[in-house]
Length: 116
Length: 115
Image (tube, rainbow over all chains, first blue to last red; front, side, top):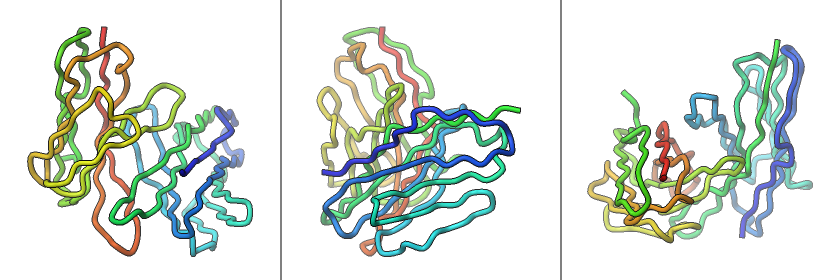
């Protein structure tokens, strides 16, 4: 069975601070995919990134960066110079392939509050 | 227009009523999913479908049923709604790719309250 743990329930930072959201996953599969989604106050879910288990390169997209470490089963997400618009709930998710299946297992989410 | 459209966006109903949540997509994806989100929890998979002839139970399918009427349409039914089914419901789609797990694209959600 798969499991995703986001131990940080809620984080509050002041604008322009850097913040890291932690994600730890469990799976026995050797091929898997990790995702981050953002859920702003309006409620929709926005896809941010997908990473497969064979690619441990870190990725940067503007103020967002992701650190994937298989040795610690972690896929952490860092926002540099946070802004109020970054306030949202962020979900980490894991997907493994079973035949033609690609079901997502979600963590419980981290609520990020960025204040002025 | 949204690629994944859920109707209704909000619904309040009474215990014991039958209710249907609808999802339609214009992305041309084969795979469709229904999730529910409860406060403080992640999303839990209710049902998923890989094409119009394929329906699969997810983690929490009891009390729910689905119908894949066409590639673009996937509806979720609560035959006899109960208060603990009050939640935010999401429909999602993903493309078929045998070499990788494509990201799922979500609708805006349906907020369902059962009194």
